[in-house]
Length: 212
Image (tube, rainbow, N blue to C red; front, side, top):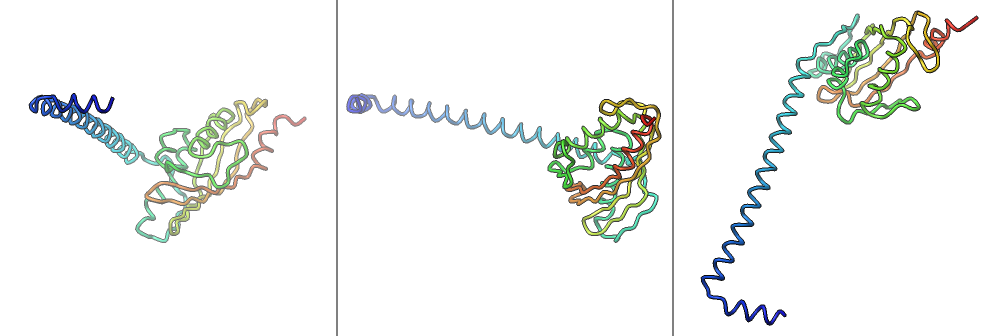
């Protein structure tokens, strides 16, 4: 078969062989240009999305302010403090845009509670669950310490247990407990979080209305 194809190719006029070669070249070029065009369109779309996200984040204004701030006054201190306050604003409002504005894409919870999803999904789900129990949840930042690439935040959570927590229905119990968070911040986003909540106080308050 190879011998037949070779003889056939040898009998083709030179101009026809050249035409076939040129047509193949043009076809390959068209496909190549199409792929390049699609790639450039995809990159442009991705760039536009990134720019839009950056604009949305830049427009976010924290809904809470620290009652006391101690900072090393480093060049990145302001960006670190802003990330911490944006994240506190997320817990204060339940608005997911504050979480996305504060947390890095590869965010890691270094003290992940059992059953909570890793990454940004974890706090988003935790906020919904907690607000189902305490719909009027509010959060204040009592202390904010910024040193190096870290922020340490003392948070106060308060509201009324009027919703549902697991199988328990709230009876209006007062909720008031504290937590301490430590964040690592890079390029203005929280990449890592270590946190400790006063669950003993919280659970005793949730159970207060069920005690006889």
